[in-house]
Length: 229
Image (cartoon, rainbow, N blue to C red):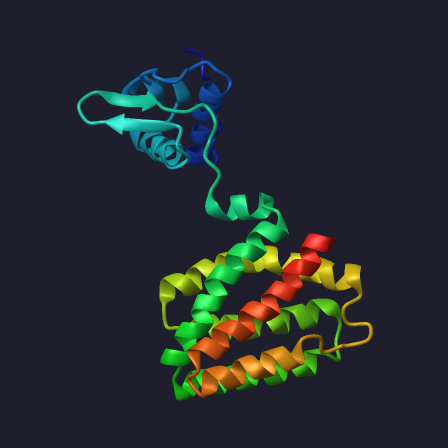
């Protein structure tokens, strides 16, 4: 095993990359038992704690697995992509379809669970969206996403909110591209204001069915445009 001693900075990252290379380059194939911590530490010129952290990172990437009493074994030669990476690679249409599933349910929950503070936040976000209609496409999209984030927050489900937040970076760039490509705001700077007004009103009067239906229709119109691009 010729791994080579590491430079003094930053050791855990270097150790992880060096061990990862042994796996992805085929030096250690699936099913191979890795050398022990002492052997790896000596080969890399680092302490056992550094090796332990590197192995933990490789396990998190789905490359190795520790088996109690047996050692650490290679279980894959390609790292698993984390959720944010998968989203960045996904087509915007695929992301938008999942967004519909999340937000329509969130709108119905928000209509049933919203508080006075939630309504205040929704109305403020709606007003900000209208104000942003005077600005550029990026600012308008940011204001639109802020309104939808307020809606999901009003559902009072932290897991749902965290999941939606993962979509925001992909949604943002996709929506900016869509607005610019289809010139959606050329004739209507505050594109979609009527639908968002109806949506907020439905949540305010606790009409879950209307809230879900309104948002589904609003999002489907945008999804249809995405499919047509």
